[in-house]
Structure formats: structure tokens, C-alpha cells
Image 1: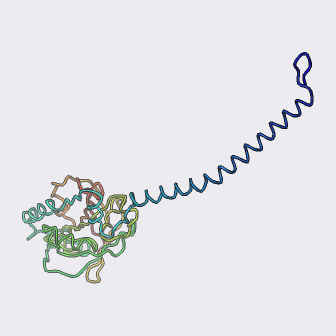
Image 2: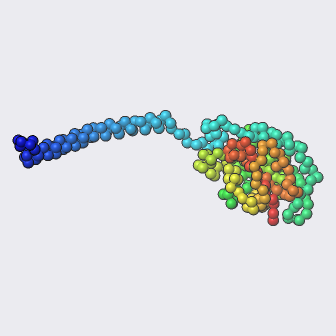
Image 3: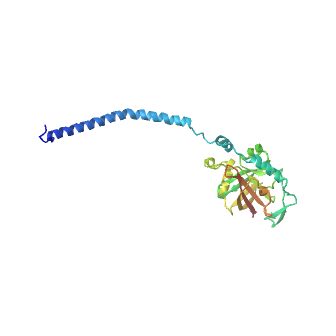
Length: 265
């Protein structure tokens, strides 16, 4: 009942408030009931959607072989197919007979020798970048892709036709590198260990073991060269050196990353 001014009485206000409370409680109960039904359905739907996505977009584990990984992820680019064939041709034009280089042991000039029959494994360590006792296969026929890739699966390779460490002149050693997405999860894989060469600094040591004899070289130069720069095969400044090479950018190979180290006592 209202008065002549149509103002609700106290009882009417109380009744209206009670009705609002009851409506709110009923709405809450209804929401709870609906939620208890929807949550399981929503969860089941999301579980099914996630499983479907996992099935359709499942990422395969990275295989042990870097070449296999590249073949699956990219169009595999192996610069060696033409590059090493050209290098092999160039080595024939580099006159080594009757050439001399400085021998740090004797302090005199020593005749450079090339022993293409040597077949014992050598080992390289570069402690500053985490390379330890990685196998160097000697006298690898580098003009044949099948041959050099067979050796590069287990380490790095010495380029046949260049001197061996300790024999004067410039020993040429090369290895694969890997794109970062592969190397992050395979940092110690011998096949791609030269991915670390990018981190080497001038003045750091390169140690090579051959026939239980240790040869220590100090890095003097680090550079990026064009793929047709074959001067890297030559003896450097009449010094006994080792040249380390891998593809640049890492794992791609449009250019070459070259590190030159000079032998010291």
C-alpha cells in the first residue's frame, strides 16, 4: 500500500529487498549448476583440440645426422660439391716441392713435405671454445662428396695435398658447421663441432696431436672469405701454419669462415 504521493511504505521496501535477494541467490545457484555442466564439457573440448594439434603439428626430434636434419628442414646446401672439387684442382697448381717454411723448433728454414700416404688419425683441441680431442681424418680426398662426408660425420678432415701438422707449410683442416637451431641442442656433436670456430679469438691456442707428438699453434688471423678464394691453401708468410675452415654463415655456406694459426714452441 502506498500513500497519496505514491511513496513505498517500509513493508513494501522490505518485501522488494527480499525479492531481490532471492532473485540473486537463484541466479547464483543457476550459474553454479550451469558451470558444473559446462566446465567438464569445455575441458573435454580443449583436451581434444590440444591432442589434435599435437597430432597434426607434432615436431619430430632432431636426428643425429646434421645432413639428415637439413634435408628434412631445408633444401640441403652442401658447398663442398663444387667448392672442394675446385680446391682439389687448385692444389695441383700450388708448388710445394722445394719450398721452405720457418721451423720454430730449430729456428731455421725447413723444407715443406707432403705425405699423402699417412693414414693415422690426429686430434685437435681448442680449449678456449670447448673443442677437445676431436678426430682429424688425414689425407681426405676432398673432391668427392661421398668420401669427405663419410669422414666429417666423425670429426674434421685434413685436406689431401696439403702438409700434415709438423711437416712445414700450411696444413688445411675443414669441418661442417650447423645452423643455430640444430647446434643449440647438439653442441658436442663431432659432425658440427666447427660451429664453435666463430667464437675463437686472436692469440688463442690450437693444439694438434699426431703420433703422440703435440703441435701448438697460436691464432693470428680470422676472416670471412669468398668461396672462390683459394689463397687459403697457400703457405702463409713463410710460416708453419694450420688453416681451419668451415661454412659461413654457420650451416649455410655462401662464404667461408677461416682461422689461421701459426705454430709456436
